[in-house]
Length: 186
Image (cartoon, rainbow, N blue to C red; front, side, top):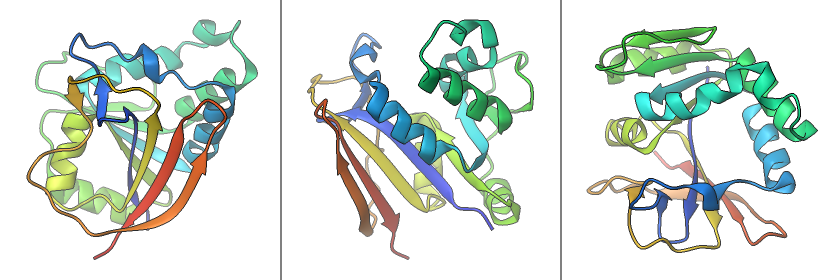
């Protein structure tokens, strides 16, 4: 049985992108990227909304990373090896291998997917994750706090949801990023 994991790189004030949609401040350095790769390696399936899928499909094209550092080429292989499910009512089709398109997010269907999975499942993008958080589907949270406050934008966490969490791990990186891993207490 898998676990549903929500990971987000956020500003200190809780945003994944600023009011203009920029998230360049969140680009991980080599140390953070290496750590993220190890977190992502056991993921068997990624669940994405349209916007997150459009950002992440960059990793599907080997030529995009051929001249990039080894840590980025490693992540591209990790990403391509996993299945992807994209939830969108507006996307006409998906363009990447091992990817299927779903029109609606069905919490019970996701619960069954996670329960029957041999690997962990990751949910990406704050809007889709909010649906899973509200449905009480998320088992673990990984938050990477970047040393920046952006003052507004796309929030990582939905309003109106209360959860009891247990801190499982924390790590400080040389660039000022802090990783927090929480398990949901049920």
